[in-house]
Image 1 (spheres, one colour):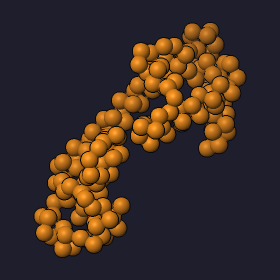
Image 2 (cartoon, rainbow, N blue to C red; image 1 turned 90 degrees about the vertical axis):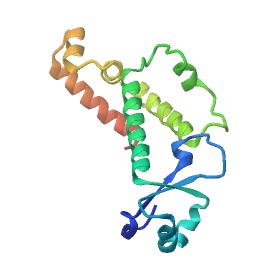
Image 3 (cartoon, helix red, strand yellow; image 1 turned 180 degrees about the horizontal axis):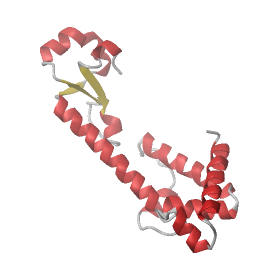
Length: 173
């Protein structure tokens, strides 16, 4: 959010993104090792668009980045091991709930992307769909899928490659 010359001096974090649904007046955090007086003197006008904001040191900013990395890692793990066609307490209701105006925008966008991906997955031929679900959602390897279906690993690999091409086409990527 800051210009390239200042990228080393400060970073602006959107607290609304980091804490969906948060309340209160402060929506931004400025991560810097500069003292408040120097920060305002050098970048006060530039940072005025983010008022009110809190100032954090670089260690606190790194904690935000570490938290974000861990959340993404856990989300990917959850997606990889989610039972696509089954029931998962809490998650099934969450994914099938009606969009609420009280939900944060990123949550609504995640649901929309999930639905878009699910629709694209439903367009695949049955064998490709089944193999994608086994591979991505259940975490089976190509070799395990081949063994379960009684076909060669090369056939599974080719089928998954074709499925990825089809998904890209359906999703217009």
